[in-house]
Length: 419
Image (tube, rainbow, N blue to C red):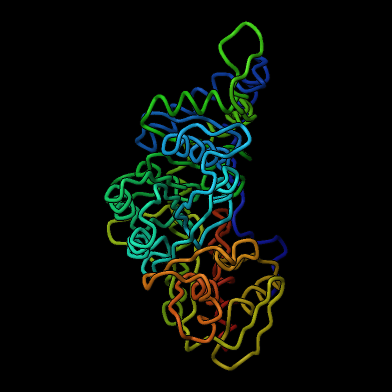
């Protein structure tokens, strides 16, 4: 097989030309800052698509998560002193297998993340482990749950557990825009939700995100906080901490031009997933699980290697080694082989409880607290679903501009690793 002349990417922006019309409109009308028709339209469309009443256009999804966390904290515990965060010293239950942007806002506000293990059947937060966490810490009143790679988990059950225990739910739908569970849009389950228009997402603005809510007071507060919390006075007057988080009307122009193509992008991503599933049908691997009743957006196709077909692999915080074995492979070998052919794959998200900065935080499995269980997992003594998926899984090239012929070669490259 020949090396790809043009790199095969994990996921890149797919532009259509219509975006420039709205960017040009912002330029010609001189609305280049954080107000304008593009922002208004993005907020209208985002709320409509997500089946929520209100959307607040922000600079990124992390900003949306931060304002959601801040509002939830003040709702639950009252407004803090300026020198303290809204969650100062409070535990918050968080997804374990996710990008750290999901839970960094909890730390911004002084909260203490407690990580909930992953469900093997969905690769998302385990509702059984979440229920166990509430048994251990019934005082917790906030849950932050992410949906992985555009494949919904049982966010409906997560929501039910939260309601049972009087907790608020923040839904990080950054990767799952357009996906549904039982016909209900991801981004519509949380008391607060966040979506992303980052450069590699299902649609993009190069940056940007939205906070979604059904509460007008939340939307108004988020808009105020995102524009430096300026009071309604003829001069610049401030009574609380604010942020420079508002979406640019130029970025909104790109997002506005992308929204008509959301369903087209999802269909393209689904075709990529289906070709991988067919191409690997006789290999000892499994693709991202699809929960009954869900329709993913298929943002990133990923796979996990059956344990008995894993060759020896070891990782530290910065590197990985493996020993080649006939008929077996591992994520490290596959990723290195793809890279040698000029194709990009990535490891599965490294679970948060395995990250250096969070290793001493509580980690709760179906069996209970697992703060010190990572080493035991390595020895095979403890069920740690997130660590297992991380060890055996990888994300595959999923760019929707990859041709079927290019993907066929990617499939052959991966198959060769099992020789």
